Amino acid sequence: FCLLHVSQEPVRAKELGEQMKTAIFDLIDSRLFFDKFFVAAESGDMWTLNEQLRKPSCRVDAVAQAGGAAALAFAARAGQLPAVKALVQRHAQIDHTSESGRTALHRACYGGHTEIVDFLLKSRANIDKQ
Image 1: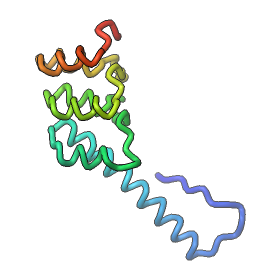
Image 2 (image 1 turned 90 degrees about the horizontal axis):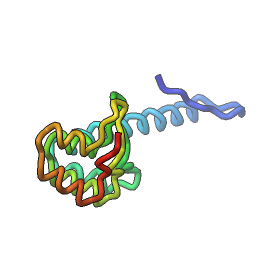
Image 3 (image 1 turned 60 degrees about the vertical axis):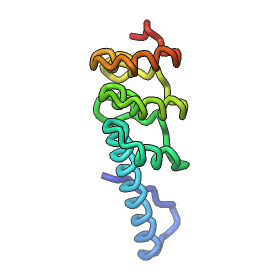
């Protein structure tokens, strides 16, 4: 469901229709961004990831609705070192903790991705973060 705030002034049907159309397109664009952003990070699709990172509306620390993990955690878990580096270079929060209490460093360790673990540690990931 999408809540649309309409001013107290009477709005003609055409104007309301335009406002609703704009709100719907904004919602769809936002959803497509999240889908592309997280899938690109996890799959290592650097072209799409960089395309999303260049957007002014890009929030590098946006979190997935399910579990609260950031794109950096998705990339670390999947062993995508170039994606991890790109996100860290764009100032992703290295120590962001998901709802389950895991950071990108935890996910890289669980996956056995030693190059990512080394990179995150060199980038000052907190080894004591819980």
